[in-house]
Length: 121
Image 1: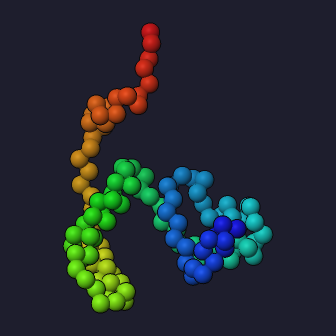
Image 2 (image 1 turned 135 degrees about the vertical axis):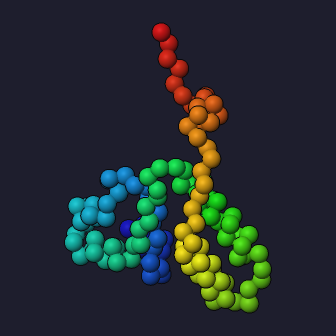
Image 3 (image 1 turned 45 degrees about the vertical axis):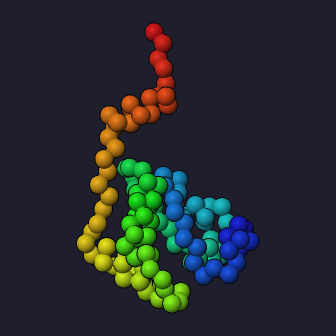
């Protein structure tokens, strides 16, 4: 099992998955013995990506904001870093800060024109 091979010492494994209906943790019970499925479920923490928008770009934006607002200083210890990030995260979540997406479908059709199929009549 890859989770055991690569992350044997991890108490929790954070999985970031898109929101496809095939990405359900119940599928572990279909593929594995119930005890093994349960063992894995206790180690996994699942976060689904947003249904709409570019989740990777949103993640990059959040990391850039975190870097500029919180990580632009030295920390005396890992614990101090963790406390600062946690405080930043709590404050940001309390304000319900989101991403203001400016890339429209019209923009995509222009910029990504080469990716669209050509229909021949």
